[in-house]
Length: 110
Image (cartoon, rainbow, N blue to C red):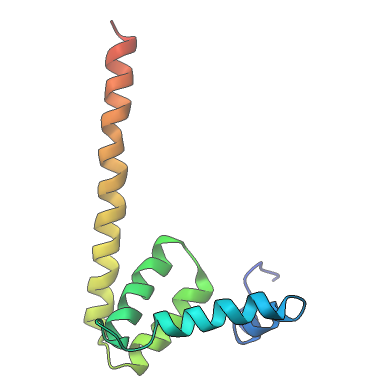
């Protein structure tokens, strides 16, 4: 069965720079700097990235950051909790936009 997302594509990510090497290098340098140890640990950053990967619904990122979290010592419980945090934020954002729906409905009902 064909699929737009092929797990075999993830290790090929660096190929994105084949025809624009300078831009790709700038991205990869930035990316590496962002995920280096800083005020947040690499483990904390991997958990954030895993949560965001679910929000942006990127299967490649979910694959990569699930592996990354495990490699950096995160537990499955921590990873699941991070997923619930991002789910709560996303759900809350949808609900708070319901205020706009209510205002429009109230205005049109006048």
